[in-house]
Length: 225
Ligand code: 4HQ
Image 1 (cartoon, rainbow, N blue to C red):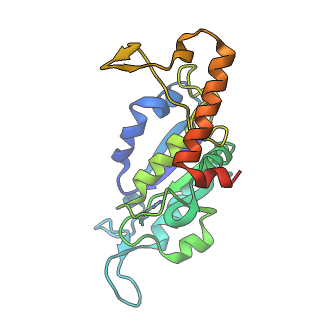
Image 2 (cartoon, rainbow, N blue to C red):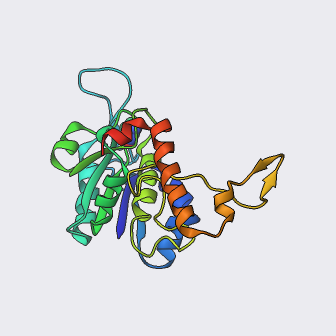
């Protein structure tokens, strides 16, 4: 899978490119992350890509032309890429949406700064608006990295056996509790069943804990099932 990112801060993406699950996916040639410096598509010598909002008010708006030119250039290379704009107005990113996006061949992630992009980009050039949650962050870059990480984990071969896809949300439930050595610390013991070696009992215990965990911590996701 190919990710193309349109951003004013390409160097931020070293955070996922250099280390961790996404980095490993890149090294195994299962995915790639390409960044495009939006300033290179500016039409003036100051390399500006924003301007004052019509109607007045605070902040600046990212202009149509540089973004449209950049998307055009990416589409010349990758005609089937889907353009996603990261914004609080988007469809909420969930496990299921990450799975769905992982089935695309390529996505282009548009990262907004300031007050965001001119509405005509959203209407005409963007295929899908995605939000990472109901709060405001200072730019689309962190949201794009969250999306790339969560989607990359769903691409087969990216996760090793150690991590696997057996995690929170994979079956619509939260995860079960995990324990490692020692068997006892400060009087706190590992549940007996996990030391029993009886795999069927362990599996049942984990299923039960995952369900109870979800009932206690996230009633809302049980109702959605
Ligand atoms: N922003 N989920 C405003 C977000 C956001 C979110 C990104 C702030 C876009 C213009 N993006 N810029 N929440 O808060 O994706």
